[in-house]
Length: 631
Ligand code: F6R
Image (tube, rainbow, N blue to C red):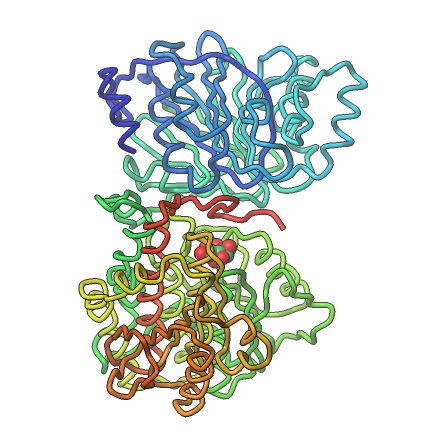
């Protein structure tokens, strides 16, 4: 955010809502979007409303960052947009610009159209009276567009979003009142969407959502609209999560929310208890590193009120009504899938048949599901389309469902029958770090509670985790180990038992942020194919901690050493580590169930150091976005 502060300082701007702004805007054009971040702001005193809009966008860039734009409604409706990162938009916006009390903005992650100026949001209608930002996919856009074009509307892009301003325009042409015009327009949309719209001459933002997140931030005499809380958390933690179909009309000093049928409603304001600083970089060069270092606190939050001293009782309120299920299906993607593999193993060992499915491959039609089946959606964002789709399928098939998520009020949390929050705090870096660690901790509590199998030693181990992670962060040797192996052809990660999912996670993290080739394997699988890739240019990071079969793991490590691979052993027992180890990274001793959290911390540092040495854009790896809201 330094660039933003510098920008404001150079121009004598103040950066807090409720203060007086001095600022800019104008321009125009059209586009489409999917993953993306939405911001909106309404404040009667906001002469420079572009400041909070750009600041909000800078906090939402993790949702998409290949083009950005803003629109402000004052005397005129003014739009600025630009392809590339937010700095490009800031350069385009002049120092003085139109005043306005309401504005919207958008940062985009392209899926359908290339990241051009034309495809950046906001999109406008034929006469530039309407500006729209949108996340999601309008599935019937083609038909709507054909009908609009037949009625004389002209389009600037081939994108789906652009139909929305034209639909609103068509309503306005029929002299429909602005809010009704917005409502009538969105009622024609099929698909998933979060939409914010401005209409010329109206000091109001019109907003709605359907299967895409949208949250309001409440101030004393101002409001924010955003796709995620960190966009405005510095200024308010009082929020309203819009429900599917609700329409919010946000004016400076006045907010109304109506249901899909137009009836007024008074949604409950909630307080988000995230630390404001948790949403910022806090002096670290990257969010990812900050979030790795946040882990001791994140895990304390996850445990708080659930596990105190080893003799405390465990309270997971959200789980109280759950009966012991006959079987459990985990549905999840990426890092969350790795956490689910771990959770499923713990449950199987406690006597419940449990399986981790990739959400994108979950097909309730081909798997017997009944009311004895518990389906657990593990998703830090609570918005991953593949996971939500699997969750819906499971619900339709009659399963009881649980969401294990980080985001209060997220779609998964609201959809599932029960929710367990992992309480990791906001995670901005695209790569999952503290949320993965908190998922492991949450799933160990989940499985112990569900199977009534808590032991004092596990409670003690969980309570010790924050301090032990801190030890690793303070003294890890992974930085120098990683540096020694820069320039390798590939990196392989191997582990057994609870460490097998961590090997997959270590490889995912490495490939994701370093752009180097990395693979993770259950160690026993090496000899069934991957061993042919092993050479003296492929370091193998072997996870050697309590819980895995030491004899078998020793054999697997010797197999790679015999092929000349440099071996890095991550272990809690350096004295017993295989003699073929070239480098040893020591983690504290703990319970076998908590060991993966410690081992994973070392692997995070390994990946981070390589990416940092290679100068990669660690918080925003190419082609990726934080919240994957498309299937
Ligand atoms: C990897 C990563 C992704 C996510 C995956 C699921 O670092 O972050 O693999 O784990 O996209 O996301 P959630 O947990 O939000 O459903």
